[in-house]
Image (tube, rainbow over all chains, first blue to last red; front, top):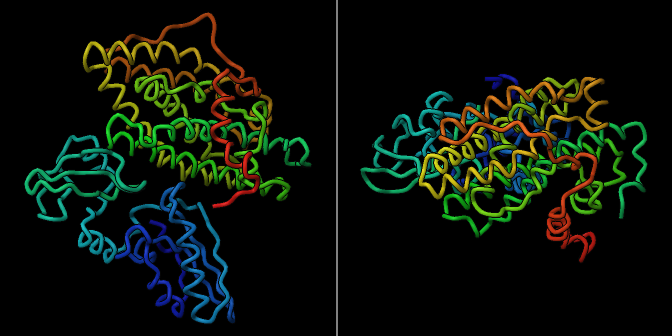
Amino acid sequence: MQQESVYIDPILEPILRQVPDPEIPVLSILDLGMVREARLKDKAVAVKLTPTYSGCPAMDVIGDDIKKAIEDAGYVCDVELVLSPAWSTDWITPEGRKALEEYGIAAPLDASADKRALLGEEKLVKCPQCQSKNTHLVSQFGSTACKALFKCDDCREPFDYFKCLI
Amino acid sequence: MSLRKHDFRENGDKIDYILTIADNSLILGQRMGELTGHGPTLEVDIACTNIALDLFGQVRSYFQYAAQLAEKSCTEDDLAFLRTEREYKNVLLVEQPNTNFAYVIAKQFLFDHYHFLFLNELQNSNDATLSAIAKKSIKEVSYHKRFSSDWVLRLGDGTSVSKEKIQKAINDLWPFTQELFEPNEPEEKAIDLGYGVDIAKLQEEYKQAVEKVLIEATLEELPVLEFYQRGGKKGIHSEHMGYLLSDMQYMQRTYPGMKW
């Protein structure tokens, strides 16, 4: 979904890959699909960044982290925040989804399944601890704007679910 | 400081329109934010403050754009914290107090259904920035709408006490909803010029959507009233607004220019 419009300069890619999401440190901002563009011209870098949620308090930190990482590598960096096209959980890479699961956060389902799961109609969200789908929704809003709170009815562990946003 | 001092030049009408639509989210966000640490359960507390956070995020996008149109003669913070009461153009509904949890939910519910329909139309604005903000925000607002509708169902179809309370809250707040669909002057101009939403056209769909939830929640159908409360969009607010603003503006008034 609009993923093809992303352009990241191959020289900058390894630098940006080092920048983690401050809320979910196992995840690179590249895996989240938040960097829409990173262009290099001589020593000047222009980055276009899109927020996951409008009110995401991590955005300023992420912008600063990107600027620092690129400037540490010897470039001049300008970070611009763009809203369109709006971020979608579809942009999370397969590596990103895997890292989320390993970190203990259930990765987003597709949109129609997400709705059924959040409405409690079907048990679809898999517990990242024991892989059981015998789970239930505790709250549609979790520890951060992008997550919902679930509990596993087999291993009894509560866990975060990364809400679908399409 | 008053914004009247600023020279908004040819963008004045558009800035007024942006403030009209953004102030709803700002003031409702402030009301929801009052629940921080005071929600009835931890989960509800977190949900309400998450909703406030989404609304503030949307407001920042609007205000940053307004500040840009004002050619930097004001900042997003000036717009949020340094206007006088009559310069806020939010509807009366969103400034109503959190009397009890039923009022928190009823207020959010009555606004969310409007907000969703409004953003759905704003996506078609001929202003690219407003359209982008709408496309971003509507994803978040669909979660808000689900949350508040879900609670109207639970309270309405819950115990006799919860039902009585949510019914009273809906009855008390319903007279504030008419104003949502009555354009003020900047809105009329925005509709004519194609960057604003023709809100009057949303009313029928709104009523149906709200009523559908109320019926499912075993609550009464919506009354047709002879008199509705209005004024906020013209800057004439209810007595609650002053108290809300004194809370919200306290830091910037006491320590002007303070930053995190």
